[in-house]
Structure formats: structure tokens, C-alpha cells
Length: 476
Ligand code: NAD
Image 1 (cartoon, rainbow, N blue to C red):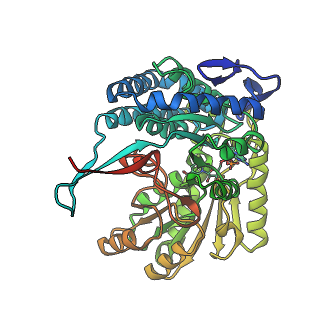
Image 2 (image 1 turned 135 degrees about the horizontal axis):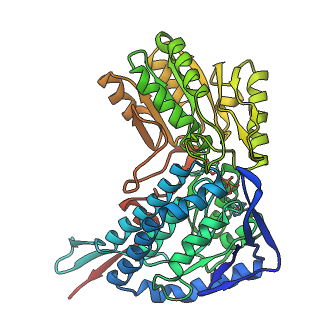
Image 3 (image 1 turned 60 degrees about the vertical axis):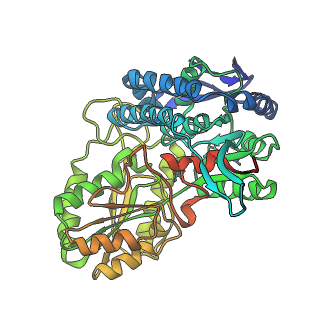
């Protein structure tokens, strides 16, 4: 299958392409994706720039109809598209189907939001003057997305962008063109004017800067790694461009002595290893108090050993492959680093399966402290480390001692500690007796410190990024 770019309402090819490989079976070529050059990116930006005023003037009903239709189709095709997602990204089939359903629900949510856009009317401090505070579209928004949620992340950027009247240029990750293509194909039939949604696939380092630096692009929403995000932030700073960044995590999960052991083990198993640990919200630091430490490590190790790792498309698989060879090598190198720094590693070896792919066993590194590299740097793989602490106060201090601040969890039956942690964990999202990963689609998503920058994504809070506030004074 050829995954073409979509520019100004037309599907366009490129002379060069990027091959799309199934990480569960490298002999399975899913297709070839367009590889745009700077000129093609410029054409997409121009198209969005031309189309933006028409869409900004659209009625809530027009926007509702588009978003609702896209949501309906995504939900109706979740099994088929979930299979494509699992085939190209490597998460298990239930995870792939679940992600497509979530993308559909996001479109449905923002369809509803089109009808609920409000402003404020205030009395002025000056006699007879009226004040209206309203929201206007930002204009053209550049959307740059990673490979690990190949349909949900484009959905949670495109849906609010359209809901609030913007035109978009989507630049998805090179490893997952199929999902971006499928989503834009649905959008292409949903009744949008030409140029409102554009898809430009290609190398991020080549065409990404073009999008970020264009004077015709009013805002950039980026999800991806810290180094790429930092570069984009510097560029947006120079151009004084509105910016939203969602980046990495080193998310702590605290397990206290009074935790229910089964709850803690299942939350950590899910949080650390589901989706092959390739979630920005993955629980990578398990901070465990003395009294439960040994029982917890034994029970989690047992659960990990029972995990079925294999081809993402097979029934009963709990953990699919790593996304590609480069990421797999990075994971293995962090396992070496953890061992060299004094950690005790179990699991984490490369695995062979019937089909050639990027398989590895989930890894647990015990006897670590929070200063080790394995606890400071995001790995983005199925690797969790355990940090033993004396009690709650030390657990909270260790949890917060990180450059990141996306999600933080605690397993406890103490209302006092749960409540204190909710208030004092320095993270954008806090989970009590739940995995650090796995969030609802109708509430804000984002972090603090090095994890995020700018307004929150998702839910009603998305309006902060995708609109500009206008204050109007009238003397009738
Ligand atoms: P990445 O930074 O390598 O790439 C992200 C996107 O940026 C891709 O589309 C890529 O092509 C593009 N890009 C690369 N260089 C660019 C440049 N110079 N200018 C503009 N765009 C450029 O990240 P990845 O490997 O695709 O994704 C993994 C990372 O994403 C992890 O760090 C993970 O934590 C993060 N992530 C964060 C969230 C969140 O919401 N906080 C969610 C999912 C993933």
C-alpha cells in the first residue's frame, strides 16, 4: 500500500518513499510512505493558510457534523484500524483496537464541544461600557506527533484544532504512516473545505523545521522526545510562536507497606510493561517501602515471568515487540548501564519468536537508587527499576526528585497518604491505586517540569492552546 501525502484536498506522491515494516515480523512490509521535501511542506502550509479563514468562519453545526462523522467512522472501524495500528506499531491487538476507539471518542467529545463554545460578558468599571471576552481560532496549527500512539495523539490534536476553527498540517512520525494516513483519509471524506487538513509525511529532521519556522504557521503542538522538543521550543521562541510540548517521563509509582499487594502488582505490571513500556506515562521508577519490598518484588517478578510476549497480532499476547531495532538496542544498552551501576537485573533479554521481530522480555532492575542513570533518563521500553525507601516521606521525596513531572502514582490503603500524595506529587497527573498510564479522553492531559510546556491537551482545557482570547469593549 502507498501512503500518500494529502495537500490542499489532493493525495500526492513523492519521488522517494519510506518503507513501513511490521515490528512483529520484519518480512511483512505494510507499505511505503511518502517522503516529502521542503517544497511539498511549503505547499501544505500555503494550503492551510489559504483555507484557515473559511474554516474559522464555519458554524458550530458544520464543525459538529465533520467531527461527529469522523468519530462515528473510527468507532465503526476500530477492529480493522486497530489491526493496522498493532501491525505497524507493535502494541497488542486489544491495545490497538482500544486506541482507535479512544480516537473515535475524542472526535465525539470535540464534536460536542463545538456546540458549547462560550464567552464571558462583564460589566465595565466605566459607566455604559460593555465587555465581551470571546475566543478566536489561532489560525494554522502545525501538529508533530510521535510513533507510540499513532492514531490517538493525532486525534487529540486534530479534533480540538478543528473544533475551535483552525486549519492544520499534520507531520506524523516516520514509523507509523499507516495510521496517520487512515485518519486523514477519513477526514478527507468528512466535508471539510480543501486545505483545512493536510498530511505531510517525511523525515522530521528535514521537513519538521520548515513547519516550525514558517511565518504562515501560527502555533505548534508537539509530542515527542525532550531533545526534539527543546529544539522546537528554541525555534518557536525566536519566532514568538505559540507552543505546546508534551515530552518524556520518568514516572514514579510509590508502593507503601499498607498497599493491597494484588492492586500494587497489577498497577505496576500494567504501568511498566503494557504497550511494551512505550508510553510517556509508563511507571519506570517503582518506589517501594521496606515492609512490603521483598513480597512486592517476588510477586511482580512472578507476574512478569508469566507475561506472554510475542507477535502483536496473535491472541493472548500481553506484550508485543519493541517498535524497531534502534529502540531495542537503546533498551538493551540501558540494561547494561543499570547493571554496571550496581543494579540487579532480571529479564530484559532479547527473545526469538516464530517471526523475526524486535522482541525482548520485560526487565526489572532491583537494588537501585534514584541517582543511577536508569532512574534519571527516560528509556521508553519495558524496563522498570525498584528503589527501596524507608517510609512515605522518603518515597515522596524520591518520587519528586526527577527532571520530569508527567504522571505519578501511589498504591496505599491510607487515605491520609493518598490525599497528601495527590497534593504534593509534582506531576501533572496523579493516580491512586491505578497505573500511572491509562487516562480518560475528556479531561486534561499533561505534566510539569521537563515533561510538558504550554497549555494542557485534551478535554475543555484544549481551548487554551487552540484559541486566542479576545476582549472587546463597546459603548453602545
Ligand atoms: P521524537 O522526538 O524522535 O519524534 C517526534 C516527532 O518529531 C516525529 O514526528 C519526528 O519526525 C519529529 N521530528 C524529529 N526531528 C524534528 C525536528 N528537528 N523538527 C521538527 N520535528 C521533528 O520522538 P519519538 O521517538 O517519535 O517518540 C517518543 C517520545 O515521545 C518519548 O520521549 C515519549 O516520552 C514521548 N511521548 C510523550 C507523550 C506525552 O504526551 N508527554 C506522549 C507520547 C510520547
